[in-house]
Structure formats: C-alpha cells, structure tokens
Image (cartoon, rainbow, N blue to C red):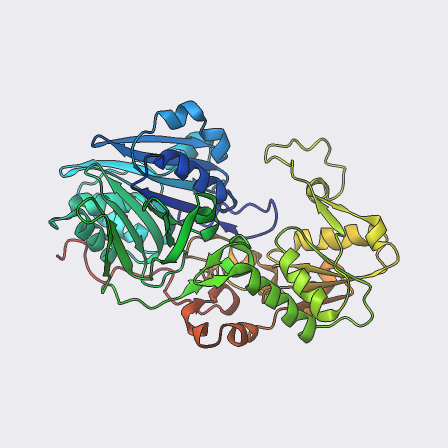
Length: 482
Ligand code: SF4
C-alpha cells in the first residue's frame, strides 16, 4: 500500500481500510470464486481491483480502477482461466488515475526462477529504508507502492524454494502485512506479519479447494467453510505435491507476538465476519451494551444509529437501556464518489447527500445517536445539527470506541495526528464543538473486560499512542547481510 499518510479523504470522516485480499487454490472456477470473494470484501477498498490466475504455467492478470463489478465482467473472467487465483481490492485517493492504476494489485514479477504475483493488505513501516537499500544495489521500482519491495526481496533471494524466499523477504520487513502469492509452477503462499495486525483467514470448499481471504464474509459467499486464521507470523504453502497446507513460522525480526487491530471490530470489518477468531457483530453489540451501562441517558425516548457502522452498537445500547431502537437516519445507497456538488451554498451538502433524518422518529424526542468513532469531528457536528433541524429535542451522542488520539501506521488510512479532534480537545470541548447535549466515548478499559485473556493480543495504538512497533523502525541489519 501507499505508505504516506497525506491522502486521507474526509468523505465520511472515518479512517479507511486500505485493502482486502483473496487467494483460491485448486478450483476450476478460481477466477469466478475470486471475483465473488472480492465483491464480499468491497467494503475494504473501492478504488481499484485486480486478479491474477495461473494457467498452463502462465500468469494472467487483469487490474482496473473502480469497483469489482466495474473492473470485471463475463468476458474478462473468461480471460482468466486456471484453478488458482489471487485477488485484491484497494482503497486510495493518493493521486491521479494513471498512478492509481499502476498501484492496483496484484503485482506480477518475472524473476530468474519464474513469474509470481502478490496481493498485500497492510503497510511496511521500514519500506523507505528497504527501498533505498534495494535501489542502491540497482533495483528499479515502477510504482510508489510499498508492496513492490516484496517482489524485489523475493527476486533477490538465493533461498532454494519459493516459500523460503517469501520467508526470507518477510524476515526483512517490518509492519503490517497479510499477503497472498501465486507462482507459475502452481504454488499458493499466504503470509501474515508476526504481529498479525491485519486479518487473514482460511477456509475450504466441499470439493477440497482452499480459500484465503481477509474476512470470513468472503468465505461465506463462495461457500467455503471457515477453518482458522492464518496465524500471526505464519507462512502457509499450498501446492500440488501434497494438496494440503504446509505451515512455517517467522522467527525474525522476532517470533509471533499478536497485536491484532481492534479497529477491525469497531469499524472496518463486516458485522457478519469472524475476525481474529471473534464475531464482529458480537463485539459491536457488546460495545453498545457497555456504553448504555457506563454512559446512560435518563428518560431518553429513542436510540438511533449513524448508519451503517453504528447500527450494531446502537442495537446493543437500546437493548441494554430498554429503549426502542429506530431508524432516525437513512443512508442513501446511491451516492457515487464522483457526484458533482451543485452549489457551495447548500450547507452540509455532503452529509445530506448520504444521510437523511426521519422526522417521524425524531420530532420532540430526546435522542441517543450511536456512532462507531469520531475522527475529525466535522461529520458529527453536521449530524447533530441535522437531527436538531429535524425536530429532536435533545441529541446525546454515544461513540462505540475510545477517543482516537494517534494515526495508524499499520495499513489504515487516518488523518495526521494533529487533525484528530480527540488529540486537540477533551470530551467536553468536543461536545461543545459538535453541539450535542451530551457526549460519551467507550471507556478504554471496556476492551479488557470484553477480551479477557485475549486483551494483550490486540493493538490499541490509535487510542493509547502506544505503538507496538515503532512507526519509523530502522532496519536492524542490511538487507544484504545474509
Ligand atoms: S493503530 Fe489503531 S487502526 Fe492501526 S492497527 Fe492499531 S488499532 Fe488498528
């Protein structure tokens, strides 16, 4: 992914997941299954999509800008034969369309030991250093994506098999990665960084074919049964010799030390997914219940959500508070990113285009509105104003995550730290800024209560500022040390 943090879009004033990946092994319908799985992961990236299949020892690749359904059609899928595939959906607003297209994955490389492709979700924090060293040794880069360093590291490796080359490359990289690879000689490799920041799961279809995907919602759509996660620090190989998976673990730069991204449970993942071994729906519902207990609103009339990301937490809040949940805000399904603003004069136009208040639910009511997070606070203030204009007597905002005080360096696009409202203001100042009658965030000790013994296996850095991996980690040794 693009490692810079200068392309944050305030389209929804939310952090953005940067990618989703898929890998299919041993299925005659690999490209169609991959297409469906990418479609299920569309929420993880809408700017570009791509797929690579392997047929008769040749890699075929199609990538494009836009949604999965924009990039692929029947005839494109017919051009992608073979029984193995990897795919990628990507988010970025980084640059002009030509640059975006160049950065759309999977990437394919031709090396002295054959062609291979990679799809990556995450962000290498030592990318600049590795790239500089590689360039010094003569490597030529053709994209601005950090993922390209993996191709160069693998191509330079002298290890005897592909999976060992991947393992060696991973040992040189620091940061977040969930990656899938295919090779022209029929190998599929999946790898996850030792912290396991980003998710990656594995499932199997009834015909024995194996599916890797960022989330289980993709397995569901292709009728694959969820087996397990690819573990943090695990490199998994599937090939023709056994038709079964072979697994090995990274010991460098350090052994597995899980720090899974808690934000997947707060906002990024689909509620119907199992992520890091837990139901996303159950997590969000519990966050809402905790909020209702810790930050109740006396005599409130109705609980509503900021759709869709706040819905499950709002249901939990309403159930715990014993107050009806209603749809006080409706989200438009049809807002495209290219919609042209007809007039600067229409106040809060962007938000109004997406969200519409329901007067029948709001008029004269004391309303609790639940959202998953506040980033810059700009959208929240527009929502509060919209609810008041629709007749709400009081608006009490409840946020199903703690205040975000730091940027993410592990594959999530967030604004710079100084742009985060919780980094500049305390809760009361934010309440005033957004114009709510009251405001409460999820207490940060809620995670400990909810996750129990699993608590230490998660990353909370954007809420605590305590980063499990130095965002500007230097390389511990030269890439040519070996
Ligand atoms: S910093 Fe926040 S968004 Fe980034 S991996 Fe950690 S918990 Fe997830």
